[in-house]
Length: 512
Image 1 (cartoon, rainbow, N blue to C red):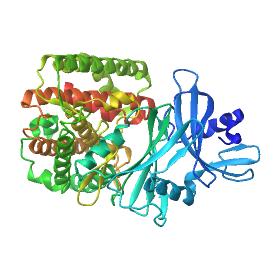
Image 2: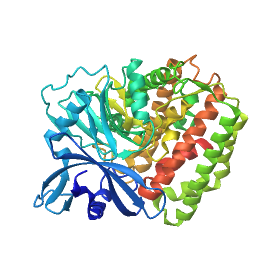
Image 3: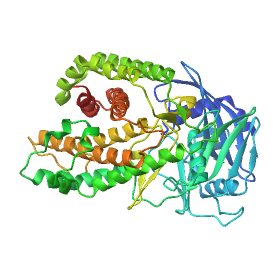
Image 4: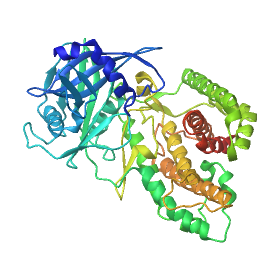
């Protein structure tokens, strides 16, 4: 390892940069020290992958990857300085990006002092070792990892946090590529860091999918037209949004509502079908122990119930502590929600009382509109890493498929009610019209969610991961909808209290 990286002062110099980076996940923790555990040099370059051991004032530490270039000390873009050298962000340099892609194509092994960076390719990669370099750029998308796009052909996602064990994004991506599920980008290669016999995923190379943005962006754009048409009408929104989306899924959409929502009803139905096809593909690995479907047992029901109740207790405790700081239109809904806490507990208790015919399968784990790309004609599902805050073993665990379904239904409500917070392009809420906007948002959410569910259950009919009766579907979907909405309550209380209204209204619609 270069002697520069053995200077203990360098770790201290990196603290501010690491703590302020988008990819650093432990924003609530105080960094007490950073050790450069390894430095892996790309051959014949001044580019390195640094493995940072990060210590906190409380709890266990983490390992992160930091790609750097060594430059002269007077470099103006330094992220840290060490003697006569400056460390700069290697991702900003084209040659570094070229070397990474070539390492995968050539299946290179890059040794460090303690471990090895291993680059590998899959049979789906047509690029040959030593092929001409491609134009490339770092993606500007807000994410906890870093992605490089190569000339609209490939996208290389670097996992900044190293976690020992099998990364579900890599694992599921490879599985779906082998099983020819065409609505997720094919996996073309991988990067991993091996240390003391343990491997940690460091990157995944996939085919680049030309797209018009994610499904969240597409949905907000479609909502612009919906609100323009609905608010210009002289009719009031129907009050059927109070019905459960499963019940509404069997009803005809009124012609006027259909004309207001437009083609997005077909988009929601297509997304429902693609979700069912994804689950069918994930349930097809009977010969692979990591993917073989498993029964949902009484022990599973008890464990799920304990998890749901425990998570709810934490969120309701936080809501009570912060209730005095809540203001505006959400004050009364919060009071009502606190009064109805026992109703939430009753919905969770039903999990133990309901026999479950559906099997547990591998699933997406963090499924929402932001995890789907819209191509202009179809949807491509991406990012199978699961919720980053959950432990790796939990993200790899098999679960009921309706957990993903609930995540997407919650995402529809978020999109519709984002209109109240200036997120729908071109929509300006006139004084005194907020309640009408809210009512139309609820109507849109109700019918779009129903279209999605109708299509999902139609496409998944007879599959083992789908409950075989209406009662079971209702109990499970309600539990997962409430779990997701309660998580959102905690998130909004801590990060965007103005948005608290969205998950609170979502919970109340289920428990009133």
